[in-house]
Length: 343
Ligand code: IPM
Ligand code: MG
Image 1 (tube, rainbow, N blue to C red):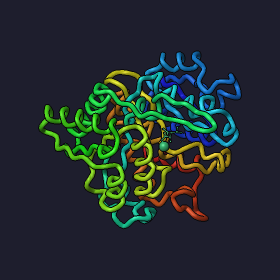
Image 2 (tube, rainbow, N blue to C red; image 1 turned 180 degrees about the vertical axis):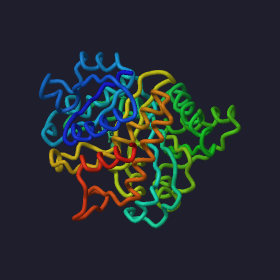
Image 3 (cartoon, rainbow, N blue to C red; image 1 turned 60 degrees about the vertical axis):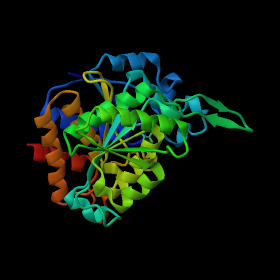
């Protein structure tokens, strides 16, 4: 099993180091270190050179830290580190971004909300279509982005959502803006047709503005949320607040079963704390656990990593972002604590 590693920018290299230590504690893997994002702009003048993408494609899975930072902010849109990330997702064909949102008992007090008890849902975000990839024009006087979806794109994301729902509480909430957007009306129609053929799943629809409110008011109602690219981007940052810190949320980006998948924390490269050794590695470690589960069918090992994370949180291990205060542990110390739990 060969894993492409993209340390990337900011805290990326530190959290990837942490995840590799954890992977090595539960299995034997080969690694191929690849370059993307700001690091690749500095080295190759391109946030995702074709040669790096093809090296990744020869691996079984990709584990990424984070891309971007203020250093590259003045570059034009299509030359920025983020453009490399979008090309990477598209190039790997990973159309479904899975973002599990689970509350840890020990972190309940880290959440600013009182409504988080028992929250356990997963956001399935369409990742390589919609407004992120639509036709775009950019001038000084006017600019335009286009949100476009095809029936086939809506169908394949629902196949992923449906598979996940079947292994969970069998409830899917589709989020759209069908009262305004034509692309959302197509989304809703195709989603209804899909679940009409999968009657074991309960389907609900929410407009995205209402969904944003429901996530705060009553997050327990959700099991699987399926939504288009930008809505999913926004709602998943919002959902991360429920867990107490965006430093906790992993993600898996997958295509069809058996194809290469991309794993990354949902947080960014946190340039303000880069190199200080204080970044929370948990989202990346949990992303590695998702890799074990989804790419390598190593459920036992995935569960062991997740249990180790939960155990250290129960013991009071906290990074700065989790409210660690004066006793906060750094990246390495948290990783060591997790390794010790794994045994
Ligand atoms: C995410 C990020 C990216 C996105 C950015 C960095 C392009 O916010 O993975 O959620 O918008 O998809
Ligand atoms: Mg985002």
